[in-house]
Structure formats: structure tokens, C-alpha cells
Length: 259
Length: 368
Ligand code: HEM
Image (cartoon, rainbow over all chains, first blue to last red; front, side, top):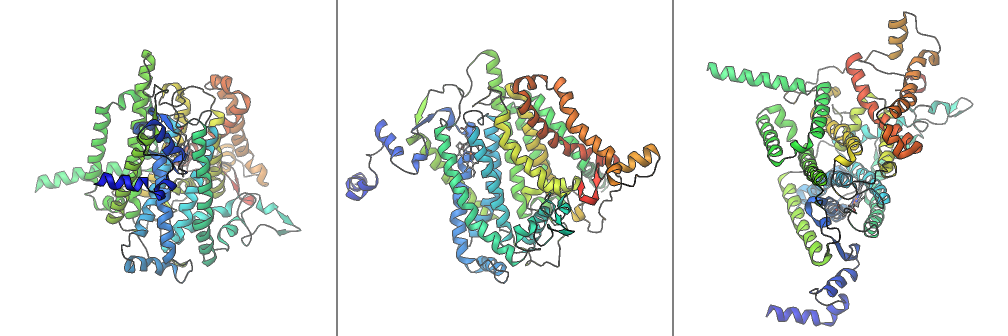
């Protein structure tokens, strides 16, 4: 009965138009299942046996990717409820807990973000310990490092958005360091030499910290700036780099193994 | 009654001992010692029975410690739970990696095939990998939902620019950097050193020319690379995060794990400058007037550190490495390693001499 129903679906025109291959039961259709699907096609058709052992990869790259997807989904849902202004931000977050059914969104988003920072480090540790950054995978390691930096920046920009004391002061501590950028921060080494006729060119009103916060303190402009970076700009860059990362894994011969 | 009192005072003295052992200098010395003891004896330490015993003891220690109010308060703070998870997962996976390295190293000595051998044995991604991924996906979803139900995301008072919390901590993954701020000015700790960490990580594959150990776990074939990387990752990153999260309290003072966070303890005072040590204490002359002259000894010391030590190491420890990787790569390696080691060196100088700056050109904000 169920079998018949399954067959009826698989023989229908709709199913056939989406999945061009037959049921993946033999070598050819199984290869087709991967090759003819844009998402699964991120994989090669066949992989080294050692490369899919859990003890080899610890699945950490995969879990990091999973957490990134969780962040996207929960993040989009959070954007429905959240307004990035000093008047509303805090109370929108508070209301989320009180008024939204199944209000686990914020928990999922926050713990997912913490977890992603941890798993990306563990992924890097695994790649290092197996020497998988060695030729031909040098470039993919570099792409990975940029992904790591962007992941930390994603976390950092998101930290401000609840607009509570923890958020605001953590970002204050973090962004104060930009003030000390050599040559570009108002209290950085050598900045005092950048001047015209005794008028300093690098001061608190135009230095690196000002660029980060859009102001001299963590205020409404900083909130808006971090919101846009957090919700739009950095996720887009990460998505592009992830495509490169995955594509390169395949092109570099799949997950590494002894030569 | 007597015995209860006696035992509670033994517990107190144990707690006191641990509080002291967690002071910055002991904490770092013990961590570094443990790190090298682990690496030297990795074949013994990773034996399942040994590792399980160590793990069980650590768990027991943690559970017993949770009976202390101050300890429980700090480890169960919602935002600190991820750090406890990180400690557990980093330890476990280091064990897993080194366990396989130990097995592989032994097999190579005996001429047996590696754990990862049989590179030509390929399996189809559908179904083998796709189904494993599906299972991982379901498991991780369940775990994350459970975590979200059990632990509410914290929300403090609304942001108020006039009321600074004490301590004001950076997000936990940057606490290693904030800890560096204790020893270096922000331009180094917050800008130059993080920049070098990123550049250094990217440079690793281009500096490490060792063709062995590609695609399998080993320690023996890559001792220098693995030790250097792990020193940075475990000691200077993870350990400092743990330190910053659990042991730094009000006024960025150190507090032992069983200590109450006393807000009235004043911030530490730093008053020893290298130029004072050199001109006043050593030569018994007043400080030179011009700041460049005043700082000359420090500048020479620092210059010698960065210029001379590569030559010395090239003739001694690094002779083989220099031969293998050539001048350019060797120079890169030295810059990165010397900057990395600057951190522990400055820490030691701080603890022994209470040294503030080696070079202190405050006129330019250029202090090291
Ligand atoms: C958003 C972050 C990242 C995601 C989602 C991600 C995902 C993945 C996945 C799924 C794999 C396949 C094998 C595995 O699961 O271990 C992989 C491999 C790899 N990753 Fe990442 N990665 C990320 C960040 C990084 C970082 C930070 C590094 C290094 C600094 C890195 C370097 C590599 C390299 C070199 C490989 C090839 C490993 C091999 O062939 O054995 N990736 N990555």
C-alpha cells in the first residue's frame, strides 16, 4: 500500500521534473543523486573511507555549517520582532520572551552562536592535527582563517543588539582598542605625527574607533551600524566564502587522507 | 562535632591551596608544565585507561567544587556555560586526536599501515555520507533545542552609559585579548597582536614545508609544528579565556575559584619602568632628559630580542629547520614565534619585577 503510493509519487510528472534520476539503488543512480542536485553536489560522488569516519573529522566542519544555517533561520525570525533603535531594541528583546509563542528563538540563536565559535575552533584544531592544510589545501586553510575571523565578527556585532548592560559595555571594552590603532587611532602610537601645521588629523572625531561606532561612544549610530553588519553584510560575505570553501574541498581531492 | 570542624578546616585549606594555585603566575606555570608533560608522554597519557582516570578525577573535582557557593555561582552563570562546554570538548578532542597520533606513530615504527590507510577504498556519498550527515543534523538539532529549553538567554538591565559594570568584560571569545591588556598597551594587545595572529594563521601552510603528516594523525613527524600551534591555541588562547572568565573579578583583580568577588579590593599598582631600573637602580644616575636617550636601553634590548635571537637560534635549536625552509620562511617564522613568546616573557617580567614597560615612550603612546 505504502509502496504503491511511493511508486505513484515517484512516477508522477512533478517528481520526475524535480529529480531527474531514478531511485538511488545502484551505483549509477546513486552517483546521479549527488551530481544532479545543486546542494548535494557540494559533495564529491565518492569519498575516502577514512574521511567520513567520525574519529577523523569529528564532524566539526559539518556541525559549524549546521550552526550557521540555524543562525540564519533563527536570525531572520528574530528580525521580524526586533527594531535596531535605542528606544525599542531592549524592550523588543524583552517582549520576545513574554509575548512570542514558543519563544525559544533567542535562546537558539544565542547558544547556537556560542556553539559555532567553539566548533569552528575545534574544526581548525582537527584540520591542523591531521596536517590537512598542507598542499594542495593551503589556500582552503586561508579561506578558513578568514571565515574564522568573520565568525568572530558576527558574534561580536550580534553581542550589542540586545542593548543591555552586558552588551553595551562588552562592545565598549572591545571597541576601545580601536582607539589605539597605530597611526589611525587617536591614542595610537605615531598618530600624533600625522598633522598639518600643528592641527592633528587623527583625533577622537575621525579615528578608527569613530569609523567602527559611527560616533565617539556606543550609541544609536553604533547600534544601527552593528545591526546592518550583523544581519546583512557579514552573513553575505560568509555565504560567498563558504561556497568557495566547499567547492575547494572537492577540487582539492575531498577530505584529506594519507597520500 | 570536633571531627566536622576538623574536616571543614581541611576542606578550607584545600580550597585555599587551590585558590593560590590559580593565581596568575601559578596558573600559567602549571598549565605550561601540564602542556609539556602531556606532549612528552603523549603515548602514555592517551591510553584509554589513563585518560579515563584523568577525566573522571576532573569531573569529580568539578562536582565537589560546585558545592562551594562562589564556585557554583561563576560556573553556572548562563553565559559561562559555553566555556565549560568548550573546556570539556577541547580536552576530549585533544585526547581523541593524540590517541590516534600515538597509534599511528607506533604503527609507523613497526611498519604497519596507518589508521587512515586504504586511501583508494572509496565509498559512495549517497548513501554513506548523506545519511551520516542526516543523523548528525537530527542529533545536533535535538541537543541545541534541549540546551535552549534548559538555559534561558540572559538579559541584564537596559544599557546605561552612565553606569559601568565592574568588571566590564569583553565577549568571552575575546577574553584572551583582554587578558593581554594587563601586560601590554591596547595598540599591541588589541591591534597588532590580533593582526599577527590572523596573518600568522594564514601563513602556516606556506611556512611549514614538512611534507610528512599530510592527511593523518601523527605527532612524531611534526613535533615542532604541532607544539608551536598548540602552545598558541591551548595556552595563549583557551587557557587565557578560562582565566579571564572565571578568575578575573572587579577592577580586573584576580580572584581564586572559591573566593568572594570583593568590589573594594583596589586595582593593582604598576610602578617599575625599565628605564628606572637601568639608569637609576643600576647606574645610579638620573634619567636622561631626552626621551629617546632615556628609552635607548629598552630599545636596544627589544632590538636584540628580535634581531639577535633568530641568529642564535639558527645556530642552535633551529639549525635543521633553517636548512629545510630557507631564509624567507625562517624570517617569517621567527617574527611570528618571537611575538607569540613576547606574551609569556612580559608576564614573567611583570610577576618578578612588577615591570610596567620595557620601552615607554609615553610621549608617542609607543609603549611595549
Ligand atoms: C564557517 C566556518 C567553516 C565551515 C562551515 C567549514 C566547513 C568545512 C567542512 C564541512 C569541511 C569538510 C571536512 C570536515 O567536516 O572537517 C571542511 C574542511 C576544511 N576546512 Fe573548513 N569550515 C569552516 C572554517 C574553517 C577554518 C576556520 C579553517 C582553518 C583555519 C578551515 C579549513 C579547512 C580545511 C583546510 C579543510 C579541508 C580539510 C581536509 O581536507 O581534511 N575551515 N570545512
